Image (cartoon, rainbow, N blue to C red):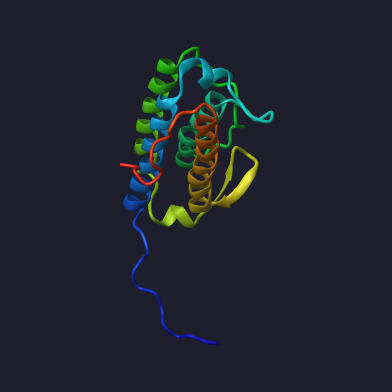
Length: 163
């Protein structure tokens, strides 16, 4: 099958992509809030990481990765860059990273989304694929948080209420 039509409209603007991502972040924040503090840092199932550790991973990837994309740096991912001692500290850092994401995301031109970038010096993909990975990774880990909350007898936030 051959087609000669050329797409002239884009599916989604970068602003819409950022808003979608921030909706996911808003929901993940509410999942963090739903955990009792002790369980946030101690509860896990089947040897998986605690939800605090999963949230720390998300914090350690998105903002630093976008900064690296904008500045052209490929520093390695640092799993221990942030180690909170309380839920309040984790949520504060989450909110700070939301602003970092907004800042650096808005510095990426439309053309740059198609450029290949070696994220953390390990993952060489187009910028847009790296950003979609950040969202996918967050959704994946948030799903783990939902399982944890349900195992603790806590009703998680509705997954469709992201804003």
